[in-house]
Length: 334
Figure 1 (spheres, one colour):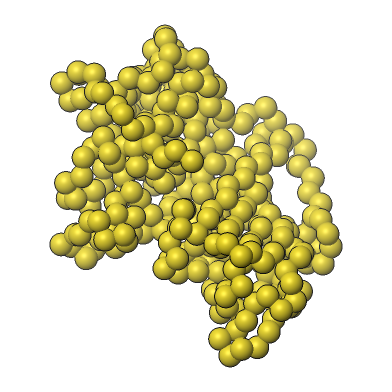
Figure 2 (cartoon, helix red, strand yellow; figure 1 turned 30 degrees about the horizontal axis):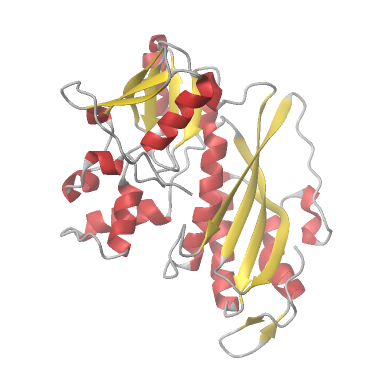
């Protein structure tokens, strides 16, 4: 981690903190279990794949005011930036190993904020079994910007891809859809919920997604095409269809919703295009339906069949009567 100007960050007390002090005291402990990270004292990390394995790398960037709110707690922001990357690894069938972290801190960032941020990383490192390997820290005149490059591994040649969907496959999605969209609506005062418990659940869906890192690797050899749901269920179903050169028929009434999402009264089509779900959308042979259900139970993740893969191209959405739905918004456009 390099390049943070010595006088860029100020504690609430007014004391200055330099870049190397921040790295040594706050971030280096996150790398203590990674031999190739060298305690964050070098300019790079060293990582070798295990024999018979491929490395899988993915990168996502989160910008304050775009991907998270200024009011979001620092530890939850840290967990979100890590988890959106872990979701990508899960959809590739990869087991997490480590990550590189880049932080562009606004000048007003406090040491307390950074410490809380690091505590969120530490909590998720423990939960998901990965470690910090290195990264970069800089000062920015713009909003807080965070980027993670996550690294995982799969047995050689077994990474799940978007382009694997096959004609005749069933289409599945994990978890529930729409909670994150509704959580953001609540945080931005566009939606109210009578139940405090449901409100909390929806907000948590937005602030702390649940990457399916346990189930993802279990789908190797079963799932044909796979993608994580980040831009919106409909948008990512269309991405899957395009990459695989097939047509995806999606049954809107089969899209799984949480109790809180159903209670919100929100339009199902809007929930299916809201984004930030970070579930796995995948296809598999109909012959594997029982195995998939068993894997869901084993890993504590609900898995729902929501459609079918056909010959052709693109995405078609159908309502509860089997009639085509006119879709105008598929998901988030960057």
